[in-house]
Length: 263
Image 1 (cartoon, rainbow, N blue to C red):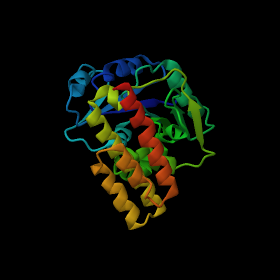
Image 2: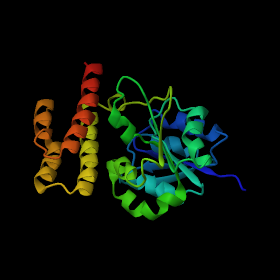
Image 3: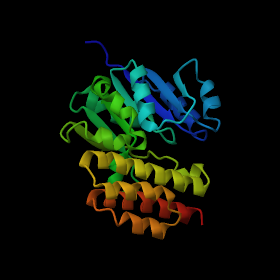
Image 4: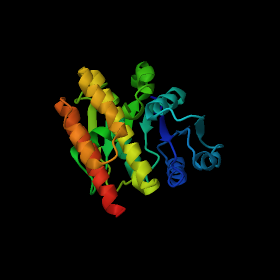
């Protein structure tokens, strides 16, 4: 039997602080056959940094930011590997061991999906569901690429519904860490990005669960909120219990931590 090949796919949007070290780790990995990085319309030095690696990796350069779902779909379409692993570009301590943990259940054919999550001060149950560190058989994703490309920041929620719990392996990636948005951007910009991501996640869930128009309207209004008290009040008026719970966890666990660190 021929060896199973693995492509690492890294979507990157304004990740100048971490992208070089991450790509270097992937290039050195004995498990990775191909590295694909998607520059998703970055306005910082991400594109310039990636150019240093252009002889050794595949670079997909998108002039305009189109969202994480589209970037992952573009990377998967381009990949040659039997297995694709998705990795966030802001990881700062990825190792060969983490790559092994992500790919081993697929190489042994015990599961169809591996979701690797971090543990730390901000660990809570939702982080397992929203983790960006994942591994799939490429053939399983190909029929879904068009829908994946439309999900933007809600791509993880969409992917979670493609496979059963029995087919999915969730594992801790010990020692893995990443930068939070407030460590990469001005606090005001980071908060806007969290709001935008939260809204996209809620929309993906809402489309699957057929939310009433009133809930969709509230979710859209979240983008215009400027203070945390108003944000919490608005979220608590959403009738869908699951979305209300997820948004409260997503926003307030991260936003409170960012404000504490920047105070």
